[in-house]
Image (tube, rainbow, N blue to C red; front, side, top):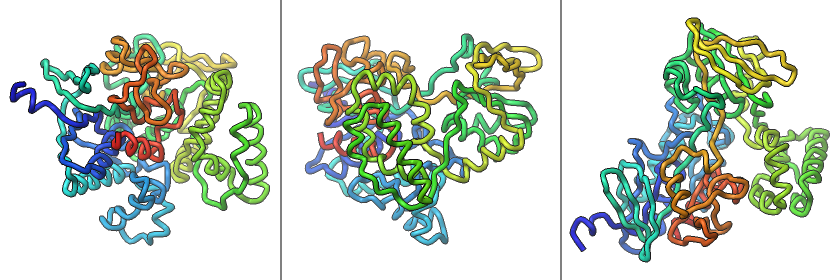
Length: 457
């Protein structure tokens, strides 16, 4: 064994340095009982940001109150403690701050501080390699990781925390558009640059759309904003109020149709008592994975075909202030919502001409200065624009998850399942890649639990 080989070995390799990867590293450091080497592979210069928390702008708020955003399962008030101790949000009483929706950039800073503290106290050593991993190869003694320029690492265990990628614009030729005319919603600075007098189009009406709208408003945009999506449903607001007390356990034995009826009835009953309907969704929030796993395959398909968009707007809600701002722009006419599929994009001297198909056929061509892609997270494994994911699939080390969503993993441990259906204990998966198996696998409550499980091995 050469000195170079020794240098490029580690006990635990973490692929991805966004929130999920940092949570895994944090837990691995906290639970290390002996000296060990942890290597985190992340090409971006800043850790803990990924897509959701990379924004530097104060108008982009967390979708969950600060009091519920701890990154540590055993310390539910840890994020709140950080905000108070660091004075990141000054002169706000603790009980008030717990219910506030703070800027998302604060959460990335929190994770970085907790990671630094864990490094100082741990028996393990963390090293960050600012390069992407292009391939993984299971071996008899662990996993080999291949980087660029024929650089390889050997790890006893690997955790995949690759994070999210955005779906491409659903129209031929979109990739050939000039960068100034086609911007992804996650390009937070790029969206702000578009603010001005030109009309703009946002494709998609979910959380990324709301991010783009408030960013344009903060930057002083004066033109119209056209929002196009298949259902034209906007994210709904969070709400404060009493909790409902109904027992959600019987939902687990119901069919999809029965569950929808029951939840509607519970929401109506809550509103009749002066309780926000949102409390019903909060009541079943801890059961998200159990609800998915208890559905039969046919009902899961029905959910994905008929229910998922309605579920999303009720489940993934936005801060009340953000909802109010988007609603006011729509009332004023500056934001115009269209239920339509984007069909073609034509480059003209006057800008981009959009043609869409609406159910009533009444959508005229729209001329805009630029289009913002807010189509959301790519969940289909075969469509993911990640060379590592495609290598794993092509080489038979992974297979798509149920319904083609994410990668298939074991339910409890998150071990990657190979193309022959065999679990690979040396490769664990955390986060959005487990969506097909668990459905609820994107938010911090799930990520922090998965991170602790993966770190412990």
